[in-house]
Image (cartoon, rainbow, N blue to C red; front, side, top):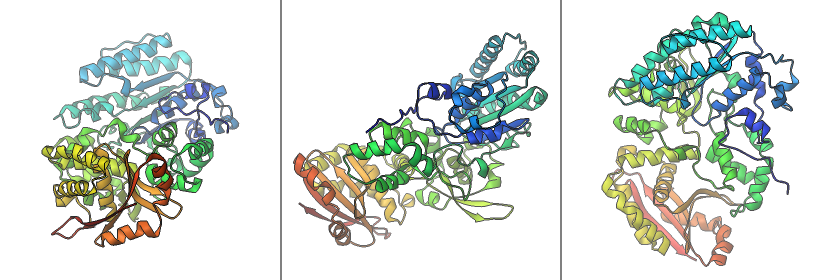
Length: 536
């Protein structure tokens, strides 16, 4: 079996990807639509780790005229002229954003570095004046309109949410800095700005009203992330290799279904195809097909959890979340620093940061309103874990070692008693009357205990709710809500879920457990009511 094309999830340079032979999913048809126009001024917001920096680097290569890097890609087959232009690339992720003075110093240095690279002299007492002078001098020296590429434009503000008026100070400075782009329009050829959040037109971009916002433009809905067709075609070799090496035997269709459940589902425009998070997909294949959290492994922003608990946000609130399109045009993320910031604002931020995505259009009127949902299991689990941790009293953390010890020794009764006690401490107002909720919550608890739990394992006859694996024991688990443990256990038997692990258990000397668990959402319970175990 030939080796698939190498993958990199840490290379954000288009030139490096292409020169080193890494897999690149061709998105250049979208770039062609944007760069072929005489003048372009664009803005696009996407969640973190969605390829925004790679997009900026791709524009950079295009405007440097590096056509050889695009050999075999869509744009190379078009009539694009490949003219070179002077470039101003500002990446706020690489700047000092600890203090406003630090940011100004970083910006000043970067502007002088760019000027030096083009051998032009700029002058001014502030970064704003220097920025304007640089745009003009580059255009005059190169006899071509300047290209302005700004990455992570909102990072200085997001880093200071919840710190009183600090975020507002950064916002006010950046508002003045970015407005130079409009003032120097005559000297510019192309502008592309990207970040996580979409600020209100009356906020940071109030004076930069010549930008075309493609954040929710259907034509560019799949510019970031991978579609189903791109996954199946571009990662075909990796899919084949994963199936050949995976310990959990499944066919191609089952693998694709599980990938979709875990990592697909991001929709930024209603009625468009959902996309996969690219970092999650790349990391999955590089980790030999292990299903776990990759996008969120870098950590959930602490301010999101803090705001969620301040607003007493619950999973039921998330389940019923709605958002109007016009609300995004009035959104000012600095308002979230205030205690008075409501849930509507928080939902907007959760949408923009990728925790929520568009489900469907509820009202197609001038005030378009959307229902929101979690994109996939990876996101749902991550949010539930953080919300659970925030609401769980610190003194309850002693359960971790006890549950792990019980699972590893096959002491199911003790494990169930500990689960009951933990769930009893989860406030009723964050619980949902859904079997999926309790399945997720138990998996969250077990994962937090450091044991190997595998949600929604597929077999040739269906999907197991969870499998818990320890060196000496394997638990096949099925959950029911407001039914009975008998029914849950019966489903394991009827569909012979155990068959998938019989040989593994025999070869490794592990004991197999069939475990049916029933929950009740009745106000007098909201916990495990009965469980049934069969040891094989």
